Image 1 (tube, rainbow, N blue to C red):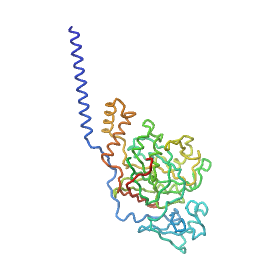
Image 2 (cartoon, rainbow, N blue to C red):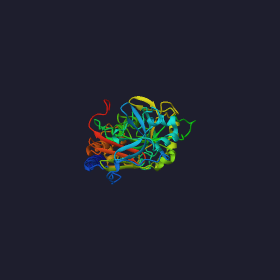
Image 3 (tube, rainbow, N blue to C red):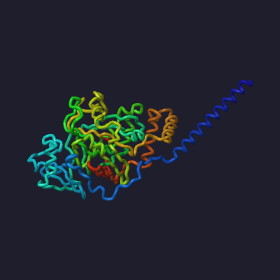
Image 4 (tube, rainbow, N blue to C red):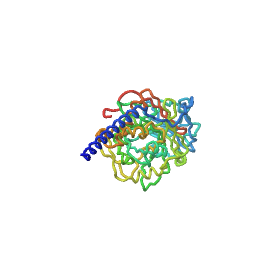
Length: 414
């Protein structure tokens, strides 16, 4: 009898302890849930007054700079010699050479660096001046491009991904003043990136090219779509990145296209800034990339025949394995300062509690549950890009992008 009594007492104590722990857990969850989520910023710098009126243009001996403009009878290409007071000045290459180029890559491939340098520096040739807001996309090219993830150490830390990786980026380039619809739902984020542009097909046989084009770009991203599709146990596999970064309008490019005489030195001296409503959010120094530009090219060429999902279709990194086709833009990675951060301690705790409380039915894993908490917090805080936000992306010697976030859907399938 005494043994049975002791067992009943022990069982009662166990139930009481369990109930107490459950109450404590619920109480802890409520306390932590009430703590406001944090979305830290990296910089506190403001944009300098008047700085967006123009950018420095490299001496043609150092780099050729181009802009595409509409003449009314079709596009033409300017060899740019100045950019100030929101106006771009340059020599109409077609008028100077008696040609009919509509794209700077074609002009370069046909005429070559010395001839274009001579055109840009010939003071006897008539200069044309256009509003920087009226230039066309910097190049006229196809829609099969390449993205590079976490190629800066600090961005690796904020995203908790430890090495760079590649993925296909599919979509048309948009010009430097194109508004971007906020979309219906989702979490819209920015990423300033240096674009490396193939001027001719690149293969293992051709090796690292003598010349590459450079363009400023923004790799817009729907973070909510991304975190819903990533493989949490294989982040560098790139799953979800193509879909989250290939929405309509997600490939803004700068107003200028640059072909340096020595591109491997030129790109390392660049500084790329991104401002949101006048506040500095990102500053990239491509010299600090984990994979330098030649390494990125090598990685692309050796990726093999693996594929990624693009709206239900499996696609390769490049249409032809081992070939980076002419006009392909390789976005080389973004630095720290994006809105997204990996779930913090609070979000991981809430994610675990919600996963455990649902007996694992609310998400595929504890990590996925924490990501769901992050998305909820982000929506509640309203920290991602919203209609009315003004984003300025710029780099001396490379160009500028002016993006206004506007209301409305990006596509019927977002």
